[in-house]
Structures are given as C-alpha cells and as structure tokens.
Length: 298
Image 1: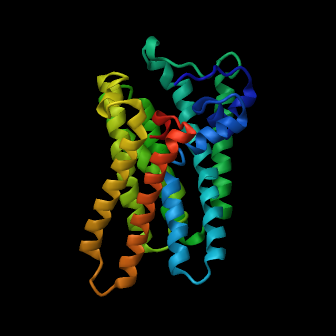
Image 2 (image 1 turned 90 degrees about the horizontal axis):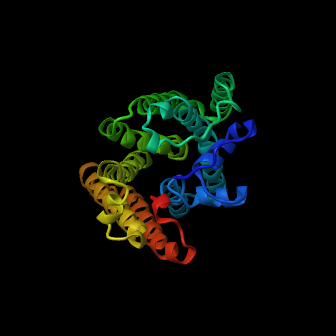
C-alpha cells in the first residue's frame, strides 16, 4: 500500500495517524469513508454489530434503549482499539521497517521530523488514552477479561513486529485479526450465546484473511487475486467464505450446545446467521455500484 511520508509531527497524533498511514483519500472525509468501507469495519465488525441490533429488536422488550447502548459500546470499542493498535503501528514503522529489505520497505515516519523521544512520547499518550477509556467506560463485570484481550493484542502485535520472515508472520496474523476485532465486539455481546457466536464469527474472519496474506506473501502479489480469478470477484469470494464458514460453525454449535426444547435460543442463533448472511450478500451487490476497493474490503 502506498502511503505518504509523514512531514509533520501532527500526523503522529492518536487516531489521525491511522487515517494518514493506513487509508487513502485526498481529505479526511474520504479517508474516514475508506476506513469504514474497508476490512477495518464494513468487512469485519459491522455485520456482527448489525446482527446484534437486529436480533435485539426481535427478542427484547426495549429495543430503542438497547440500540443506543449497542451504538455507544461499538464506538467505544474503536476508540480503544485505534490508539492501542497504533502502538503496534508505531513500533512497526520505526523499528521493524529497518529490518525489511529495501525493495519492500515503506517509510512512513521521517526520523528528522519525529525523533525516537517523540515516538516514545506518542506511545505513552496512547497508553494513557486506552487506560482512561478502560477505567472510565468499560463495564466493571467484564473489566478483567477485557484487559486480558487488550494485553494479548498488544503482545501478539509486538511479536508480529519482531518477526520479519513470512512463515513466522503467518502464525501471528490470524491471532491479530481475531484479537483486534475482539476488542470491539467483546463490548457489545451481552450473553453467553452471543459470546460463542462472536468467537465463531471472528474465527470465520481470520481464516480468509490468513489465506489472502499467505497467497500474497508466499506466492507474489498477484497470487491472492489469482486464487479468486479476478479483482472484481474479491469481495464476492471473501463474503461467501465468511458467510458460509460462519453458517457452518453456527450449525455445529447449535447441534452440540442447544437442546431441542430451547426454541428461543435456537431462534436467537438463526437470527444472527440470517442477518450476517444477508449483510455479505448485500455487500457483494453494492460493491460494484459504490466501487468499493476489493482488496481493502478483505
């Protein structure tokens, strides 16, 4: 991905750094749109988020109040995720990049503009933001398990940055995808069934992303696209894979866990499966009309 070389320290500010270095566009609005329609949101957490709201509307007594709570927790999840993930980005863009071959190296930070002391200060600021959001807003009953997820994500990202060989990074990449989106979705799940479905859904996301990375890194930049025939079918391939794998996993979960007399729980699971399948089917349709970048959705 071609990224502009940073020319000012302000681009290292929390949240702005992600937009500048990991998105495309001529303005912040275009970059935000890019972020929303990419694998960071539309191709990952958004289907499950809408499934939560849809299922809540079908089964709860106060859907309006719960919907606002879902939206708030979803936004909070990204408010925590982005600065935490940027710590890994900064480590990658200042330390790990030096160990890459020159032909693959992407320089995002000018050391003359942003010396190491400034980078360390930016990392500490992000730790502070995550800490404050965690202490103030994360519900007490999930604080311990949520803290474990945050620490695991930071640990795996650090290990991922230390590994520069393609084989080693294939091990850490699926874990990164799983934990990254767990930071967001763990806040909105409200019962054991939703937690189990979240795990199955995140597992369904990790597999195709790992396959694309494997094909691109081990076989060349065009191999991943050749696996799915052409660029226009990238979203279609990815959407079908995630939708089908989640449906199959949810079916096995239903057979193993849900008793035949628990109709309510069965309908609950079906609601999730149906809506997520509909979302990805809809994504395949609108991707051509809105000209969504196939590579970045996946």
